[in-house]
Each structure stands twice: as C-alpha cells, then as structure tokens.
Length: 518
Image (cartoon, rainbow, N blue to C red; front, side, top):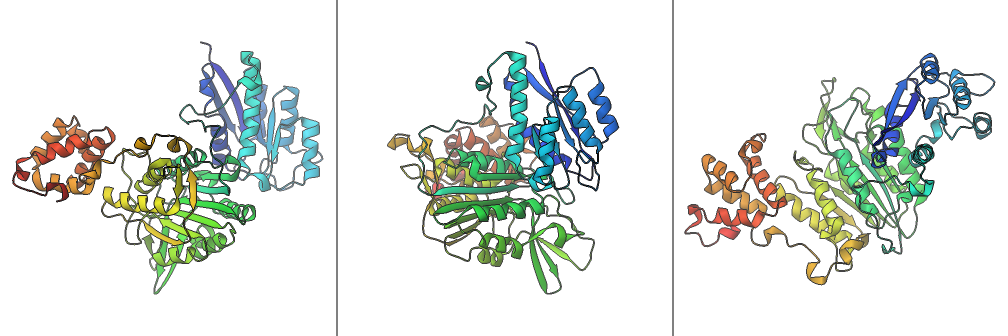
C-alpha cells in the first residue's frame, strides 16, 4: 500500500508563540490519520525567514505552512511594514500551499482581514486568540482532509478523524436537564521543576470519560503540559465563570504539583502550572487565594473541584535556604475552596499523605477510581452517577488499594447528578455492577495475610503458581509493594479469587476460623 506523507512547515521564532503549544495542537489534530491508507505527517520546524524560504523552494512539496508572521518583531505586522513572515504567506500563495498565520502580538480585526483577502490564508490566531485550541485544530484537520481527498479520490464527508480506541457516544445518550461544563488540567512535563508521569493521562482519560457521560466537547476544555501555563489556566477559569450560571454543573480538575511554602511562621500555598519556577514562585505559580477567588466567580449551581496535587518526590528544592517546601495543599485550603452553596472539593489525599502512582497503571490511584466510578461502578440502576455515591466509591476504594492514602472530601451541597452513563444503564438488572473480588476478603486484608503466612521463598513460589513472573515484581523496592502488585495483577486478569483460595490453603491458616476477615 502506498504511503501518503502530509508535510507541514512550522516557522516559529523563539520569542513568539511557544513551540510546544503549536506542536501539541498539530499532534492532536492529526493523531489518527494513520487510519487512512498508511497516511502520516512530517513536521519540519525552522526559526528564520531564510530557512523557511529555502524549504518552500525545494522540490519536495509542503502541504501546510504555519508561520509566525511577525517572526519575533516588536511591531504589529501588516502589509505595509512587510514583515518576513508576511512574505512567506505570499510565497505559499504562489505555490498553492495552504497557510495558517499566527502572531505573538495582538492584531485588530480590520488588520488581519487583509491577510485572508490578499494571501488566502486558512486561519489566523494572534496572542489574544491562542487559547482557542479547538478552532486551531479544526483548521488543520480541514486542510488535511482536503489534501487527502485529492490524494485518495474520496469525498470529504467520507473522511473522519477519530480514535479507534474511543467508544462512540450512543445517539440516544440521555440529555440531563442541566448543562455540564468542565475545565481539566494535567501537567507532567514541567519546565523548571520535577516532572511527573501520569498526570496528563489523568486529564485526557477524564475528558474521554465525561464525553461518554453526556458532556459536550463544546463545553469542556482540556489543558495539558504546554497549554497549562499560569496565564492560560487563569484565563480559562475566567471563561468558565463567564459561561456558567443558574442550573449548570461545572467540574474543575487539576492533576499536577501543589506545594506549601513555609517561611518562618507564615505559609503560602500554590498550584504549579507547567511554567512554575521556584525562583519566581509568585510570578509563575497560582496561589491558593488566587485559585479560590477564581472558583468563587463561577456561578454554576453545582461546582465540583478534583485536586490531585500531592505527588511523591515533591517539586524540588528552593535556592532560598529560608524557605521550606511541603508537598500538596492543606485541608484548611480545601475547606476555604468549598465555601458556598453547591460546592464540592475532592482531593486525592489528606495533607500529610501523598498520591500514589503504580508503574503498570495508566492513571494515578485516585484518578483510577474516579474513572471507574464514572464508568458505572458508582452509578445507580438508571446509569446516573450522583456526587455522594461517587465520593463514597472513591473514598472506600483508594485506601483499600493503598492504606496510606485517604481522599479528602468536603461537600457543601445536596446530592446531585454529576454524570449519566448510558452504556451502564442498558445492562440487565442482574448485571448492573461487576461483583468486586473483595466481597469475601479485601485486597488490604489479603496483602496482610500473604505477609503473615509466606516466607520470601514461598512468595516467589506463589507468584509462579499464579503465572506471574517473580522477576517482574523485583522492580518494586519493598516486599509490601511486591505483594500489592501480585494482588493487582491477579485482580486485573480475573484471577483474584484463585489467589484468595490459594493463600487460604496455606498451612498457616489451617487452624484459623476467621481468615477471611483477618
């Protein structure tokens, strides 16, 4: 099968738009083009007019130009001042290459209208516009679809860009009476502080779960890594406040670093955006007061805030010896955030604990059970997920998996529906909820039983009996973690009850009457 290469030239001067923002949106727009006849895209990045001009002049054609039209200039670009970025638009037009223009400077509408007319560009995004992620992605996808239609002979309405991994939302998804809104933030690849691993997965998987639970993409925004700067987060909180009102339900989700800065007897708390810098904490981080003030501007009748901000390893060490950094936020701050009718704060752990992540899990422990609850484990027989039932599900299951983590939950609200799971509501009554393996013995109890009964060599034999490679468990530093992961592997492969039975047949339990609750 012939491979089809879609070539993109990105011209981005360093002081202008952030590379990671543009690259991230290009990647998101074209994530699934490989579904179409071995199609793929190549992104070439240059920083100067000369390099871009030379690239466009080569025999190998480009199919999309995305250029910073000011190329780092300090004046607002226009036809009259002939910035080199504008000259690239002219060259692209002569070569019949579609172009999208961006600028690190704000430009009035009557100025960029002339770019559409004179250079036939397909989109324009200036500094004030660059938070419009979906619009930018839509422009790229339309250009790719037009190109692919010419390449393949297919009609435009036959070409779709969607994940093969995502379940389509049923057409008869029940529509709740209220409107659902969400702002989801996940930061893993920090620029100046300790990086995390699963936090962007958490935000993306929650986005996907909410889509399947009746939320509209038009009323949600997701900020990951390069998108999750302090300025953008505050801007999006403002947009959420302006968009919501009476009768609405809103979710704010943050997965990333949180910290408490202690200096003498005073303490200030912060959430860390992707650009957090310990040498410029006030300028680059969001204080708990600032975050809380923005939450209070949200006038939705129901506001749920999920915070997973106390990760093991911490943020890093400050250069100022007088400062002490503690992980996460305090429970006093959580209580302040919950002030007001209809407010719910759900934090991943208490202030003296850390949020756990496990290497073979896609999500952090807290988000794992949040997602499970939304997928149906916390739903009633009609598929509705009520906030109190979701809180109960999370608070019961997280410490059952990890006894040193207890979610902090503060409700100032009556019970309400936070999601509707259409797939779950269609199951027959006798299949409403998959029985959990801990009907007889909890995972925490089983872990204690293995600890009490098995020597090191016997534990290795137990792994072999359960067809789990003992060597794979040695990557975990402590025996307790190794026992946990054996239990988890058996649970996920449907062998939990077999493991329970195997353990309870150990001679250690021969004369014990109450092994199932020991």
